[in-house]
Length: 284
Ligand SMILES: Cc1ncc(COP(=O)(O)O)c(CN[C@@H]2CONC2=O)c1O
Image 1: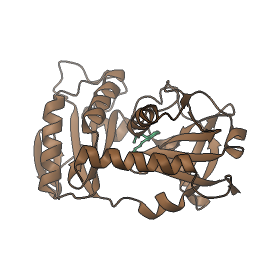
Image 2: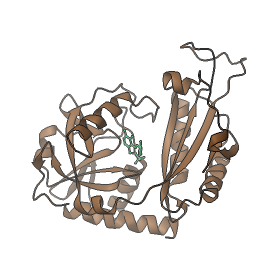
Image 3: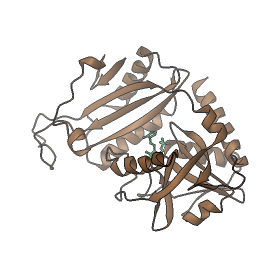
């Protein structure tokens, strides 16, 4: 399939990424994962806006406009005939002789934008059954609000989950649950949805933002406050959200069943509302 490099759509085999690209050497870049439903990009505006916010936070000049990125991404989805899938896009600070400090402004180094598509069916059976999670220490830096390429702690946490045949690792910092290794995390208690405040300790997920809207529109309390590890055990319901996992019920944490071990009522209601929003926004 085709890919995007800069403002060109090319065959993947024709693409060369420099050995000294700072994304490759330092993780010096930012990324987004956007869902495609029935050939239509979902919440692409919000994702591209966040890409620029993340870039600004690391003083990275994307050197392309959001309209240009949107246009190229829509064209790529069409060229590759993506039906149900995702687009992965990233911007790095470009290639320069290896040195920690930024390339000099007068140097020829420019940001490198790349994007490619995957065919990814919706995780229907997992959404219906729910998944299992472990919990593990959140050892990340203090700018988790930036969707950066610095994903080593996320990778190690996800691998720890995989080593226990679990789907996600729910992270905690000083006993406070922050988020998943690649998702946001929630409990439901007495009819209220509770999740960590969107500050520097978590990524403010696009799915999280859609869910907050859906809760407000449907009279479901969406409470942004810290909760503790023990609250996971005592929750009526636990779920996680991300672009790829949507609203994913968690039925076991560290081997302990959550409530009756079935996806909770509010989680299922939110799945329905989320699906309706997808259909509404992507005319599927
Ligand atoms: C650390 C982290 N928190 C929360 C989220 C959820 O954010 P969205 O709702 O905007 O997706 C992600 C998504 N991570 C992307 C999404 O899927 N795969 C990823 O790496 C993430 O990596």
